[in-house]
Amino acid sequence: MMQIMSTFEHSVKLELAISALELAGIQKQHIFAVPLTNRKVDRRLLDNLHNSDGVTLFSTGAALATAFAVVGASIGFSLKWGPIYWGLISAGSGFLIGFFIDLFINKVLKKHKRLLKGKNPQVILIVERFAEFDFSPFLAHI
Image 1 (tube, rainbow, N blue to C red):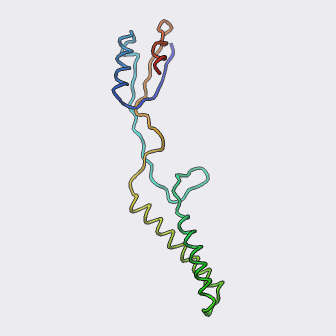
Image 2: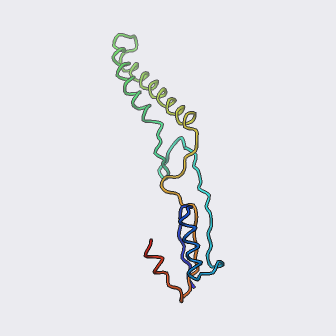
Image 3: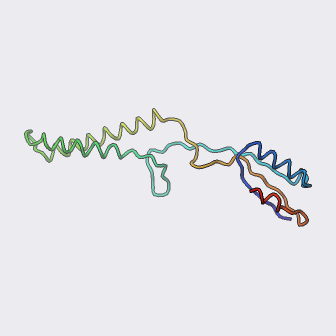
């Protein structure tokens, strides 16, 4: 005895395939369909080496830090502390502004959970195969 397992999206075609297996002689107790619950994942604020969801909070901060540093250093030539201090102060404030803009967008505006990427199977179909049954007509349609 051998078991054949496959995952499918829930559709009318799956129901037709199950009824075709029954008509072909496989008894109901040898066909097992398990519905799955597809998990939804929360957005993470910080990525690590082993897990990344493609959402970053640092890109806008880095762009604004660069722009603010250039403007701050240019204006710093005429200020008391000079261009280096004002460039660093401007870069830090630009990074914080960009970071909080991304944080606001990802936490408040996009607060819904996302489904995992790719197609999500919804049903696992398990069929017990016996030596006398031939699956080749079913495999030809796959």
